[in-house]
Image (cartoon, rainbow, N blue to C red):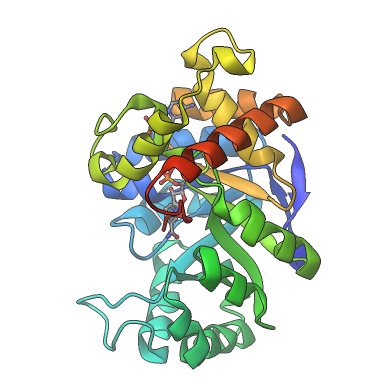
Length: 308
Ligand SMILES: NC(=O)c1ccc[n+]([C@@H]2O[C@H](COP(=O)([O-])OP(=O)(O)OC[C@H]3O[C@@H](n4cnc5c(N)ncnc54)[C@H](OP(=O)(O)O)[C@@H]3O)[C@@H](O)[C@H]2O)c1
């Protein structure tokens, strides 16, 4: 498994990471979460992403691999308000309680990175939320401060002194951050975690994804149809190659450190390891995917901005 350096943090992380959204939102059985995570760790994946806002995800990850904590880099997210915590969204009070709760749920004494979970730029500008994370960092509870988000807000975050890591959407159907954010991240040595790296399996069609994906992925599924490219156009045998094409496209973008594919399926975890091992897509293939995106965006009514 290829390792890459997560910007100025110096952490060496696997190009393929694990996204803990689906196992939370879809309520994947604990045994299955343990099977997937232990399999990934055995095969060189050392990066796990979760969030306070993914129901049950932090607990499931802590139960599955808390005993192997020194084998992976661990990221969670915070900022939203919760019924069992005091304080308003993005307040220092709620953030400090969410950090402490994440440590308990994930069975650890520190997180490698804590991200503000897609707040608006105004929250970043206000400063209270970032200051709360700096305080947690100074107390040794988190090692690095980061932001999860897209477009102008992510570019703004990249300019903040405290921010070492940004999580953002980059995939075949979401290319705005490639031009807006990645060059800035490279310049400032910011580690880039890619969320939604396989475009939520957009090739499956509108509403075909399981569970919460039915609505969540509609934008990508519609964009994919508008882009009108087939795997055959890109030199692959058939459309069964889309998961591989999508993942390799994301990992080919300069500035990307790790792509955290969300999966509830051990077989897909194995396929994603195999796809990562194939390395970057040829430049000509990347160019075709980029052209298909920009042509379809030009023909669309709205600008195709990065999706939260
Ligand atoms: N605002 C934020 O901070 C934010 C927003 C979105 C996501 N995230 C983070 O980013 C992670 C990744 O995003 P995501 O899970 O939304 O999207 P994703 O990784 O692009 O797509 C996940 C979907 O792809 C399918 N899949 C994965 N590997 C596959 C393969 N080899 N073949 C076919 N289908 C495959 C999964 O189905 P199976 O379960 O069947 O494998 C799942 O339905 C999340 O888990 C979360 O950690 C953060």
